[in-house]
Amino acid sequence: MGAIRDAVAAMQEQGRLEHPQVSPEVDALVRDVIAQVADKWTMLILEALEEHGTLRFTQIGRIVGGISQKMLTKTVRQMECDGLITRKVHPVIPPHVDYTQTELGRELTAAFCGVWVWAETYYAQVEAARAAFRAREGR
Amino acid sequence: MGAIRDAVAAMQEQGRLEHPQVSPEVDALVRDVIAQVADKWTMLILEALEEHGTLRFTQIGRIVGGISQKMLTKTVRQMECDGLITRKVHPVIPPHVDYTQTELGRELTAAFCGVWVWAETYYAQVEAARAAFRAREGR
DNA sequence: TTCTATAGGCACCAAAAGGAGAGTGTTCGG
DNA sequence: CCGAACACTCTCCTTTTGGTGCCTATAGAA
Image (cartoon, rainbow over the protein chains, first blue to last red):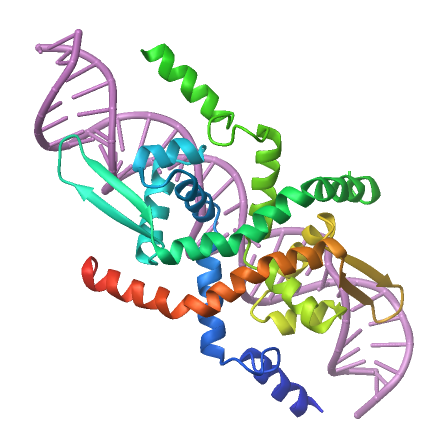
């Protein structure tokens, strides 16, 4: 019986039991992509670019709000690396850099739209659930 | 001129310039909800429950894969608090706890579906973009 | 009797995320 | 000549995240 359990555990580690149709590598890549996308700032920056079109570095920072220069730099670099945005440098002084969504970025923005709608639709219910939870369990 | 800049910065901090139609509180709540959802495990757990129905603690851990007990406990507690899942304790020995999606959770799963599809559709393009970026810029 | 399974709690520790603030190089406006 | 503007980079620091291992209770199995 221990042998069976071990075999099952081994298969589960390779992800064969939950998604029999997709390969583990694809699953891992999809998770990785989702994890990249699911950080605090990526979708907010994408939304800013969706609403305002091409923007410059400090404009993004102002529109998103509450992001440090460091995180803004890091996030736009990652997004450029992933092919979600393009970065166009104009070699003038003072420097001028434009950021624009790619088609890939626009598709992702559209795909994420459902989550925005969900959040705007149900945030009051989430608040209510949290209040009920606090009243029920914790201090 | 400094005064004007300061006033603009103050307005931007309150989020009045980017979404003139929604109140700052709603915007903050929506961001908060999105941030909750955008962690590494919440959507994976929701997916597991969507596919398998009601599950027990260790079952979720096995299906999701690669999550520590600590993070699993923490994540399901947060999800219960937010009203995404229900937690039913059967006072027997050994302990038995069932987790089930709520309607709120099911709606979120449906809303997030677009992102899963995007990831599965475009992960190859993301990979290609990353390879091109590395070839172009980095080592 | 000893082992195992369940659903965690708790303490300790490493790594990563993220903020604050200063520096950089050049050009233009005052 | 002083300061502002841009798009960063760098260092220092704190907070958060997340992993590991050890602890609990007790029923039933070996």
